[in-house]
Length: 108
Length: 114
Image 1: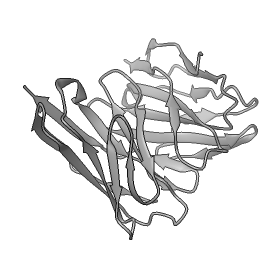
Image 2: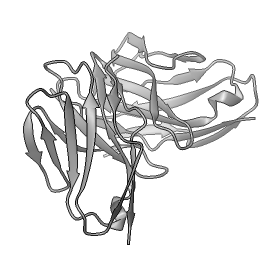
Image 3: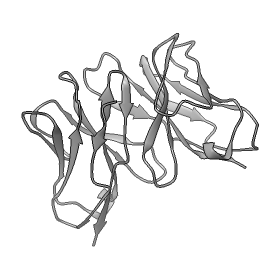
């Protein structure tokens, strides 16, 4: 099973940039790299997705090196409302797995 | 838009009872799946389906059955509930025609087995 590895937790302060890295073991050549955000008592929601290099949307940026063995989710100028769990999605064929995620705590 | 709808939202079961968690989506998505999330933990894949009539086991399938008779519905059955199945259950769907992995989740079903 394609397993992802990411830090269990991170702390930051309001206004800082936060970078969360995920390692993607055995990622398939045609798989996208996808990140999700989850608030307490809610289902995860899609943040950003990419295949290679860099992708940016209104919420985050995603950096993917050429070998695609890892990815970095970058959250610019975080606020208290960015406190959540962030998951990089693991894929093997049709199995989509979330792992333990990274618990981000943003402090004032 | 309803999206992914789960019922019930809350349920208390006694050990040994059976029940079905309902999941329906109105986005014509072929791919549907069930996850469970224990307190403070990540999501674990129970079962998934790539289309009507097709189901497969995920990471933690024991104690659960699924069926997929229509594209819209993907019920999850607990055959004989155990306290270890106390968890939050999330149903999800994805457009199989989507080259990426944008997954849509329901609001969750909180299950307590006593």
